[in-house]
Amino acid sequence: MPARGNALRRRVRSAGGKLLRRFRLLPGGMPDGIGDDAALAGAALDGEVVVYFPDTVDSLYQLRSWYGPLQELHRVQGVTIVCMDSRTAAAIRGEVPLPVVTIALDATLDAIILRSGTKLVLYVNYNPLNTAALRSRSAIHVSLLHGDSDKVVSVSNQIKAYDYSFVAGQAAIDRLERHTTLFDAPARCIPVGRPPLDTDRAELMPRTDDRPTVLYAPTWEGGQASAAYSSLATHGIPAVRSLLDEGLQVIYRPHPLTGVRVPAYGEADRELRELLAEAGGLLSTERPLQQDFADADLILCDVSAVSGDWLPTGKPLIITRPADPHARDAATELLGVVPRLLEAEAGTAGTVARGLIEHDPLREKRIELTEYYLGDITPGSSLRRFLDACRRLAARRDELWARIQDQEGTTTADPT
Figure 1: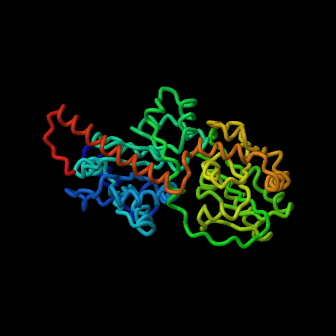
Figure 2: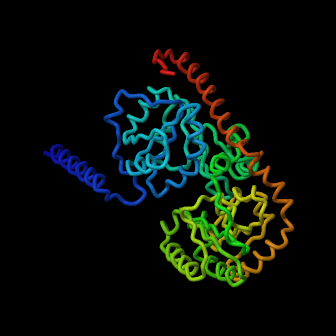
Figure 3: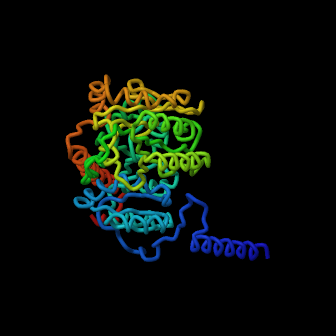
């Protein structure tokens, strides 16, 4: 009788889970697990590369930053995006012309990677759910992340789970050597620059506002206190008021995850939007990042990847100092070179910004640092390094996998 009761409870829980997934009632951040598993039985994926993205739509901005390079990679090696959430998969299909499947079961994922002869699996974050794909021995696993920054997440111990990491430049390698113990960064990190900066060079609209312009691009509040870099709820309102009072135009580019963890940041975001609407500022939620860069004379940002992506513009920047006493960073040279804005100094942002726009004494130093952070920034060079690195690792995978099969006496055929 107890066994029959347990079986009944399992069926009830399973049915309840299906209803929650079907009617989209899952908590935010939890993949719905509505997969294509049945349709994929016995099937193989086209191409050599899988991009594994188990996240929900909230985190899709991380993958979007790689759309351009992934489309170029698809042309030469074939790319399939594998999701764990059907809503995310549907969104991706509507945004980019790449094959997308949803796989809910680890057994389906493991089998199809082996059956397809997948050579590389790429990841754009450190989601714990990545372990489902990381189990595969037959592919090389590569961390891309979605930007290069001095955040502590850039030196997470999780990096050790991946065979290789594609990093922007020497600064990232030095950062990892300094802050991540027992990790051979020079051997396992491959500098590729920032390929999205090459592929996302969209046709830019001509600038229509002649006023000196500041781009305010705060990061989100972070998943833990040590990564609480956002200035939005502390510096944001007084800093933007100061910029406006100084006669500067302001572009506000909020982070997609603003307010997800701490409601106060969502409230600050709403207040700032209202302030800019009254003052004639510009809210940037749909514009390309490169358009914001082109229209701004200076960026005010937090410790985040946007500071490194800004460097090739050659224009000045100010980086805030986090107000949270528990916040820690993995500092590299840039944080010691550029002006830093404390919470208590937020009301002086306008004066500081105008002074740097009119007289930029650090320009030459920042130009020197650009190569240190990004390598060669000649248009197209980062994309070439990315594609070359993927091609080389695919060849290395074939050598390693053949050796493993010989050692194990395996007769399983590799479709490639």
